[in-house]
Image (cartoon, rainbow, N blue to C red; front, top):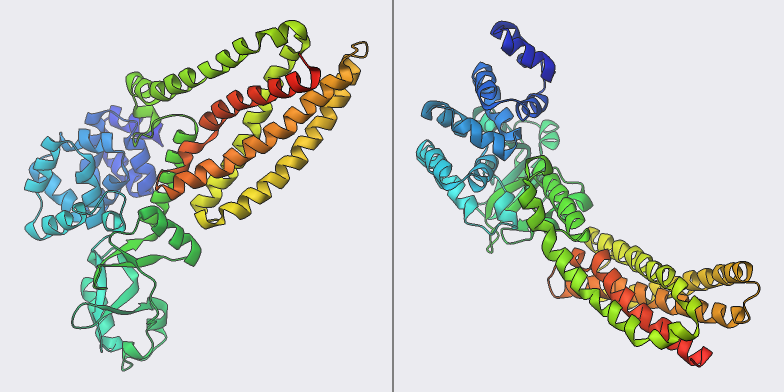
Length: 447
């Protein structure tokens, strides 16, 4: 597709190019635009039907959007803003630099500008910031015919029309109706008689990650958003909820990999930006690992007495880090999906301790066999296997405990549990596992 577009532009065959664009999905066109030069993007955009241009624009990466806006006329910008749904327009304004925002607002009709500002006033991670006001509300007491008449008149300009919201004269949310139910009733039927009045909704201040979990739990296509007094102010659609889940998943992966989260896509990030996102965590983890060196220096005499102890250090540290990573990853995922809550800490901890004992014992048995095979002539092989075995069990218990307690504690303190993922836990476990190892060795071997 991209090669065809480039070829047609180079040959200035705009007639065939326009026909190609008409037969291509909007999302695919948008993906191609992100790979073209600014001038070529402007050419293609001007060939698009007005009814499709805004939709394709909404799919584009923010960097491509900004470059294109700088090439378009005020009239063309006004057409784009008019064609965007309110939530998409708010997202666009929230991502653009100040000079572009000024131009966008200057070319936005007053009514739409007011709706955009209403969304922008809500906190970034709240339900209010991702809702749309392009929905259809039905006055209580309306007949099915009146609803259909309103749909035909205004539905084309609304984003969410598959779920209809019934409001009383005070704009309080009274119920919802699936458009499928509407089709199965007679024109004379009153919506109040068959609407669903047990409505699950979000408030404008609900965290958007919680909203996304509600979509997943209830299998929603759309969810109403109300203010503190239960007045209907907006609707969140499933595509916006899924985008939140995707962004939260990407952010958690970055945090769990010891990187500062960033909204930019990797391909558009500069080397210096990547450096800034990674160096702070790397410095922190490097300095934290200094404690490992201090512990090794403290037990230098033990090394001299039993040099073979040194060969087991990497295995013990790696095992501890792996055990902690397994538990923390499981707990973080369970917290993110709502499978467990902070009040479940003792139950989860008990489960992980049981797993730790079983894993640690299995590792100790296998390691004992390994020592007996690898060091058959070493007179301390049985004592050595006992020291290493007990260390493995204790390290597994410690690591899995930290893998449970740290993420849940972070959640309790309203921090992102992903910050308590493998890099931090591995650093802590490395230090403590060495203390356990040499304490057991000194006690049993009397060195």
